[in-house]
Amino acid sequence: MTVNGLRWALGLMSGTSLDGVDAALIETDGEQISRFGPSLTLPYDDALRVRIRSLLDRAEGVAEDEPELLAIERDLTFRHCEAVAELRLRAPDIVPAVIGFHGQTILHQPENGRSWQIGDGALLQDRCGVPVICDFRARDLEQGGEGAPLVPVMHAALLRHHPEACAVLNIGGVANVTLLGPLAEGTREIWACDTGPGNALLDDWALRYTGIACDFDGALAQKGCVDGHVLAALLSLPYFTRPMPKSLDRLSFHPQAMALVESLSAEDGAATLAAFTVETIARTPMALTPERWFVAGGGRHNPVLMGGLRKRLGSVEDVDVLGWDGDALEAQCFGLLAARFQRNLPSSWPQTTGVKNPCVAGKAVI
Ligand SMILES: Nc1ncnc2c1ncn2[C@@H]1O[C@H](COP(=O)(O)OP(=O)(O)OP(=O)(O)O)[C@@H](O)[C@H]1O
Ligand SMILES: CC(=O)N[C@H]1[C@@H]2OC[C@@H](O2)[C@@H](O)[C@@H]1O[C@H](C)C(=O)O
Image 1: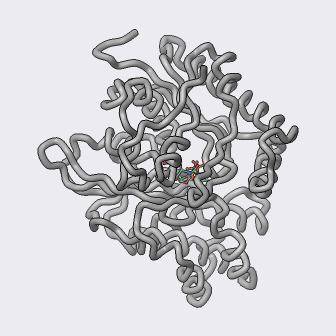
Image 2: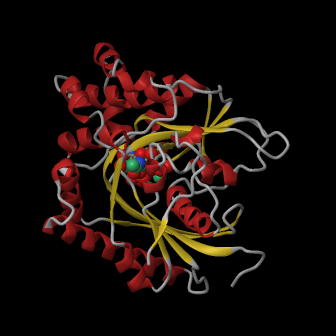
């Protein structure tokens, strides 16, 4: 049902941490978000996670018609169908008008004009019976942008009445920041970029030493000491002095970073990788110095990361203080992007992705 152009949109995001599918409902006209519906995370089972991870590790050499790729894409899409079905069970009165389907990124190389999200939009549309918008990064890349991050439009929509300059940080597998300038006569400037690693390096390190898929509550890092020499070497990688906008692949720093921490103990390695995430956020060349930082994504549950950020940046709060759900924000964002696509509204700008002109994100499944 449409009231003043407001409709329910269902967003689906499977992030770089490979933890599973996030699904969320929002009511929106593509500009304002009037209500949040329910949200959920449907984890990947271990077998699917391992298959996706091995695909990601060799994505550069994978052919688009490789049988294993197509099999993974199908299983991944079925997992998304399950997420949609489960979410609709939780909100039987809400009928989504559109689904925004991000898919799983297996490769992101903006320097080669490439960002590869797997997922079968036609299959999802067929199974769910709702129009599906997907391929959100392609047009931005075609027009000279990085294809990421796309979430700044969501942050700006939610903070459209917030007068002060502020930053919204997402700490997922990769970390990214949105800077919002002060609100002046209803408009404001928006800058964005991926800052560096989020949890991805730490996750892989923790899995190796503890068998657990993340450094839960920062338990390992808390017992370790930061190795200053290794941290300095990590921070000397050229990405960190590049001005925004810029973006990263999940594996951008893997070989170098893992080689540098290799000689450290499990605890010191975790402490150093956590400090790497914190320092790269704090040192990002910023277009403004925000007084308040709001943090979303799974990394906000890690007290070592949050404590480190508070020491470096001052006022650092969980986005939940704004009444948002920091675990659902990216999925909600793809609902918003789908609604914006249907109204032909741009979702990326020169200062957020480096795209030449404001760009409409997404493609409709025909
Ligand atoms: N209690 C916790 N302690 C430590 N880390 C946690 C905790 N809860 C979640 N995390 C971290 O959050 C990660 C998941 O974050 P999130 O779901 O935001 O990532 P994502 O959306 O997959 O990634 P991206 O935003 O890069 O696409 C986990 O991999 C883990 O590292
Ligand atoms: C290529 C890709 O999937 N990038 C993700 C990743 O995860 C966080 C960061 O890197 C961000 O750039 C992006 O996701 C969010 C949803 C974005 O586009 O804003």
